[in-house]
Length: 133
Image 1 (spheres, rainbow, N blue to C red):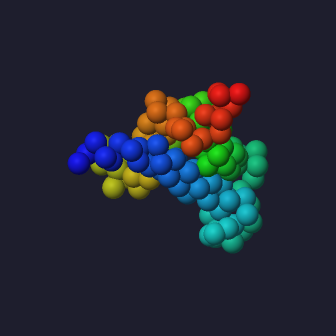
Image 2: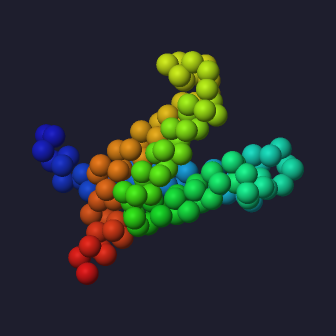
């Protein structure tokens, strides 16, 4: 039964990569364009040359590149590091109890991106198309 699931492995990796990139992209959109929600309580975009501005740039560009599956491994490496820094330094607190410091999402993103460092973008990524040409 599980051997038949392997036939869907490439499609599943594509879906997970693209949806993760899409959800991550929304954090950047929220920081700069207050869409789909405002991250500044309606006070406009975060300053571009700030810690949150740098994070927003990584979220926008990195999310878009992951959706496309372009430069997946290096982008995922950068984003995994970004989310690790967010978890340990922004959320802080007791790092062994992520529910107490609000860092569950940062920890999950960090691990998801780390997984993409090792798996790559998969068969249905632009990386795969570029590798063939």
